[in-house]
Structure formats: C-alpha cells, structure tokens
Length: 250
Image 1 (cartoon, one colour):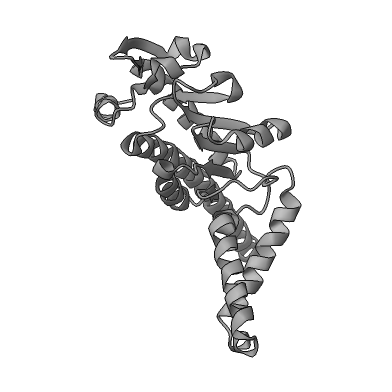
Image 2 (cartoon, one colour; image 1 turned 30 degrees about the vertical axis):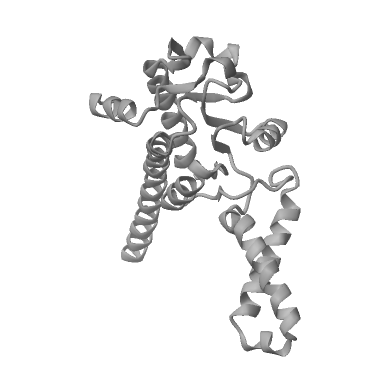
C-alpha cells in the first residue's frame, strides 16, 4: 500500500479512537497510545486490516458472490449507499430489518410488494383509489423504498457483509454469525473485535474516515468483479471460436 494512502488515512483522522473511558479492552492490540483522554489507534494495524479485507473482498467478488454493505449511522449512510451502488452490490443504509438474512424469503416477498407499489404509482390505475387510500399507498411505498431499495439486487444470501461500526449494527452481525456469513468491519476502540472476522481498526464516527475506508473496500470489489467479466468474455470468445471452427470443418 502506497505511502500516499497512508498519509490520506492519517489526514482523514482514521487513527482517532473514542474517549479512553469508553474503550473495549479487547481493542488493546490495535491501540498505539492515549492522548488527551482519547485513544490513538495504530495506523499500521489499520493498514494491515485494510489490506487483508481488500484481498478477501476481491476474491469474493471474483467468484461472482454478493457482498452486502451495511452502515445506518448518519455519518455512514450516504457513503455506504454511494459506494455499494458504485460497486454494484446491495446495501442497507437506513435501518436494518430484523431477519434480513435469517428470514430472507420474507424480505424477498416484501420486495415484490415494493415493485407492485411502484408499478401502481406509475400507472393510471392509482386514480381509481380514493384520496385517502392513495395517501396510504404512498406512505407505504416511501417506507418500503427507504428500508428495502438497497436490497433489490440481493437475489440470494451474500457471501460477506461490510459493516461500519459493528456495535451499532449488532443485529446484522448477529444474523451473519448465525448463518456463517463472513463479516468485514470498520471498528473503533469501543467495539469487540472478536465479533467480526476481519476487523479494520479505525475511526467509525468521522465522515472522511468512513469514506476513505469504504471507498478502498468498494475499489477491491470492483477489481474482483472485473475478473469475473474477463473470465466470462474469454469463455464466450472460446465458445464462438469453437463454433466457427466446427462450421469451417463442415
């Protein structure tokens, strides 16, 4: 990893932890020092965690599997939605729906309802309903869109979750662990690193800190997905070449 990126991580304040009174002792191996009652994270540990996570995510994406990005806190919501969309992966940026993983079939059925409401709102049929009913349908649509829109592309369970602040997203972590789904997480000094598979120690409250880490992870996913596209293209070219050879022989 380039010195330039390390400098960007430092400038983004990735190394700033929480107040020392709020720390989780299990984070001790990732802490460099304490300054003005605030824990300072070891940037070398952040880089190691980020490198491991990027390598893993690239492998997952190159296998054609799904990666679910999760970050519902105010500082992370916009970044998670933007970067997951850029990587072509599903996301949860507003509220984690209980059972999103463990009761996946029900969530898929709710997505069908969301599509029904969208089709209804875009057609003339909605005019057949009373004003009160139209208002109720619009309210239902807005609520469902806010909570489910990011999961539209999740037609199967993900291979991995990318999480910003596993303490905040404890329900997502719990469901992933129950199903044996790997978790990659940006964790601050108040989190339990044992709860996640691939921890990235860093500031999970600063917008710039969250942005730079999630961007790096999304880049790894995109790089891995390119390998899938390359393999598919090569396979298609081979098939086309084989057909041409057969036709030529006949």
